[in-house]
Length: 74
Image (tube, rainbow, N blue to C red; front, side):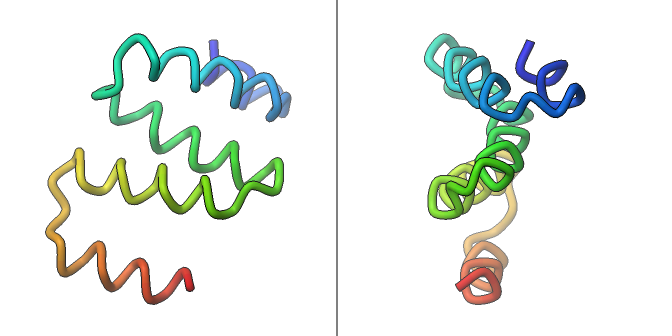
């Protein structure tokens, strides 16, 4: 549902649905990535960064690469 809300540009609803999905399955990596984008769309940049880094870790991006991303984002 969060993905469909995102595609419909209902970003606040997308956030709500994706947060709900992650309460049911915190390991759902695609939800973290899409939630990051949704947070950006609603102006929650720090939450977006956290979700993006969570997604990177879940898809097994190395700690050095995550640190580089963190430097770029800040």
